Image (cartoon, rainbow, N blue to C red; front, side, top):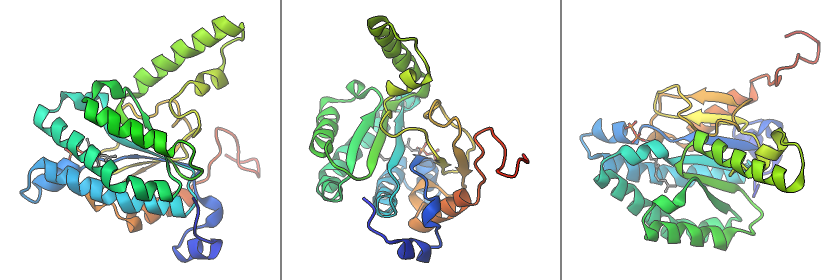
Amino acid sequence: MRTYSDEEITAFGLNPNRIPNHVAIVMDGNGRWATGRGLPRGAGHRAGVQALKDIIRFTSDIGVESLTLYAFSTENRKRPKEEIGILCGLLIEYFNREIDELHSNGVRILSIGDLNWFPTAVQQTVREAEARTAKNPGLKLNIALNYGGRAELLRAMRLADEEAKKTGAEPDEAMLARHLYTADSGDVDLLIRTGGEERVSNFLLWQIAYAELYFTDVKWPDFTRDELIKALQDYAGRERRFGGLKTDGTK
Ligand code: FPP
């Protein structure tokens, strides 16, 4: 829920009229953050969860409507069991610790991806957080867990096909989009990837069709509010034409 006034947003160096509706983040670089400090990778994930708190709070306070976070991809299932166990533990710990505050800030939590793959304790924790916050009016916080963009599209196509057969309607883009996990959040305006790689990695393939892309070398645990402000300033300076022309007719 937006809590800052236009003046306060301007004081952060942001343009209140150029705040993206939907921000998506690939939170990369936890492992390298840790190994660079001689720490185990799990310490990087823990620091990564720590970094989340202020980013969620700030996006909510400046009035971003949806924030979609890539917490665990279908490809991450290939990681060693031990690391997966650490991530699952951190997830449960995170929800137990933060859910009250998220709820009181009006955040609505939705997991996207195939949650059934996770241990029951993770499923229960996430489902409880979703149920408790389902009617909240504020920031839509979508957390990608065992998520893959191609798998999401395949699922949406199947569901759209069922709908078309049932209703006799011709499948179109709007019908498919209604069956995406993120249907309520719409297209992504700004996709941020930390950690130095410049790839999309099977994240929100449909939703990023016209997204502005922002890559930074900063590793996720070091991605502070100031780094987010830089990304938002960069976004505000982009000219979004959606395939059309500028208003003066030039390209
Ligand atoms: C990428 O770093 C990060 C992940 C695979 C996990 C991201 C998860 C979190 C920040 C915590 C869990 C989330 C929630 C919502 C509680 P990497 O390990 O690929 O880093 P590397 O590229 O340096 O190896």
